[in-house]
Length: 207
Ligand code: AMP
Image 1 (cartoon, helix red, strand yellow):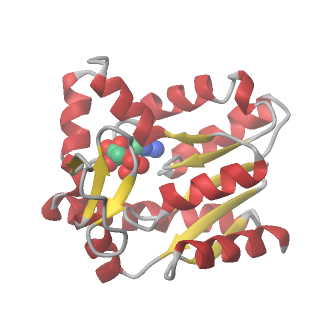
Image 2 (cartoon, protein in one colour):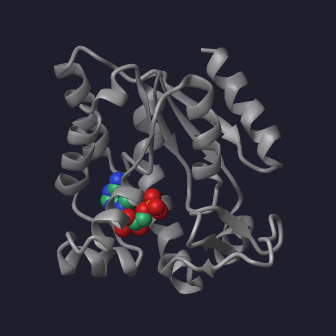
């Protein structure tokens, strides 16, 4: 199963990606996580760190390179779920040619759809426990009292607005790209985690 997950920041992409990956036994490949890991190790050039912190996109060739290398690793042999990639149509094209050079193809692109106001609330109140990596939400999934919470720098309100605007531009390119190829599955992302997961599995089995 080779999947692409398209969803705005705060749509629950990360959470749903974990459920889907567990079901299909494939790894979740997140360019955001890979970039944050590179940044934490001090391996990300300063100009890219600045772009990320401001909620902008890093250049296509950087993320394409990351995906190229990561999807060749052994755990991706039976498939993968791409989370946060592609974000532009050049990235989508690069992914297609990368896969076809390996005689592979994507099975589906899942677009998680959530209204703007809810996205703002979800992202702004999102917190991570820095010891466990577990993601909480101050309103919908309160953390335990002993959690050591941190807020992603790009979850600050003005940055979230910018990330959402960037996302709007991106979907304006990407959704038609996958729609034209008959691969797009639009899934309503409003509801509890199980409900949304069921919709995703239903959409995938309808293909
Ligand atoms: P995410 O965790 O997917 O929201 O990604 C966090 C940040 O990493 C984004 O705001 C971008 O700065 C950068 N990033 C992640 N994936 C990509 C991508 N496919 N193309 C460009 N920038 C990306």
